[in-house]
Image (tube, rainbow, N blue to C red; front, side):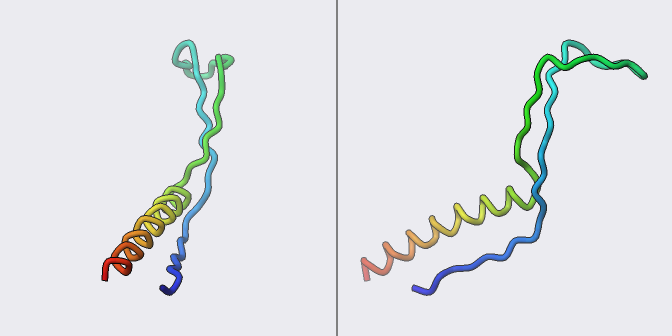
Length: 68
């Protein structure tokens, strides 16, 4: 079986999430209770989905080839 290749154009972003005790008012500065950084971005999500799909697709082809 020939190797499958996918080219994905997109971006990798870092999402910053701040846990606050209350909503910040205009011109107010308060400290966050905690912060989290998560990988994200449309391109990253597409790349992960494509990689998962390829392995599932390749396994289905292998099973089909064994049964024929």
